[in-house]
Image (cartoon, rainbow, N blue to C red; front, side, top):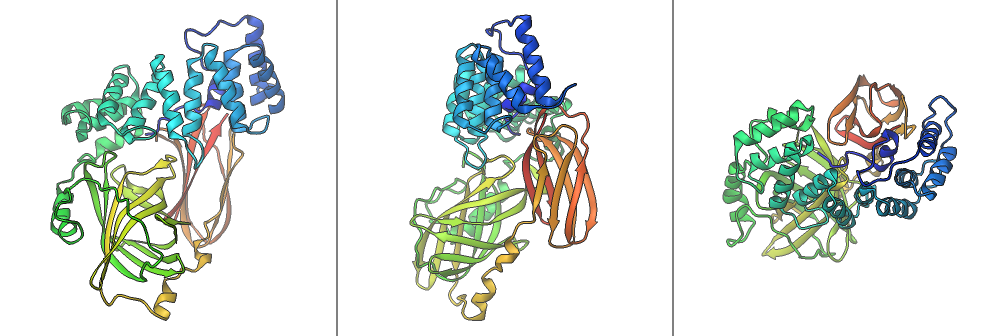
Length: 487
């Protein structure tokens, strides 16, 4: 589902061709590029990344756009040299200005894929530049950004038009997303037959998410049940009479350091990317303990998901810490996906003895390295549900229970074998998956039930292309996700 189909470093490994306007290289230059690649990958000779870095530097300084792109990737990943984002951007710019449209795309991808600190505005700008020059992968990137509203105004109409262009050009990722647009009525008229047509074409190309979507009986935007819930419960009890029934509301209220300790009950509503359609609702219970601006307690969703709650109060929001959970949704119906809590912008109000918390919760997708869909919450504390004494102490999480199970995957980048070390605090079944950036599973290993302790697994995935992959380690109700590069 992600547009991160190629990372810059991987362009080097695959030795992709530059666009038509690139200069042709003489045989000496090509021979030196091949030599540099051999040192980088250890093909027929001893692997020497610093040596490869030096050779690519010489070629880039001599004006070779391919070497410039590769050198930017080496600086970006810190291979053969220290990681240096500014140097990476500089070389990508030089590649672009020397005829490589992919240089513009690479800069956009660098900004978008920054670990935990993506810059979607700059990513959008450079994708736009490459797309206007005719770069097909950047056209898809632009559609994806518009679809989710990353670095630009969310706009299904623009996204659907660009996905249609890519779909007709034979791009499987665009076929999948165009199928979603048709199936849900996002930016284009709802058309189940056309949606099935494009999803099937993507599925025939092996696009895993298209296969999963076809297995679902309904699309994401199937909100009749949600409208009923909102109208009978949430709207009448928690929202004002003038509130739009199914439209996301952005709350610009501010928190208060006087947040009352107690038990709050209500609802959590998730919307599509546009905020126009409620796609799911959950019963939500918050058990909060406020001690000098430090909030602890429990987050309980649908009486089935219960996790410790930790947050700090600032002038405008609750800022969560060490909160992460696995949640099933339309696109992750079986094992769920991992989400991290970022912050909550809540409006606090009173009506007699009842206290209302209404606002927005921001979550972050660990898998996609980007914000999740809009979320609206509305809960209230009923009179008499205060906590005192031992009851309060029982809601303060044991900090040792919040420690993450340790998972390490190395070497990164790898060639043939990945070593995964992990430590289980309790008996659990472990499952390890390797996925492409667009969600296609290429490797799986199941451990069966393991006792608490430390373990080391050696993974030997076969027939993998040089690319960036997502490594998922599932254990108990927790998961660990990281990106790993195949040379």
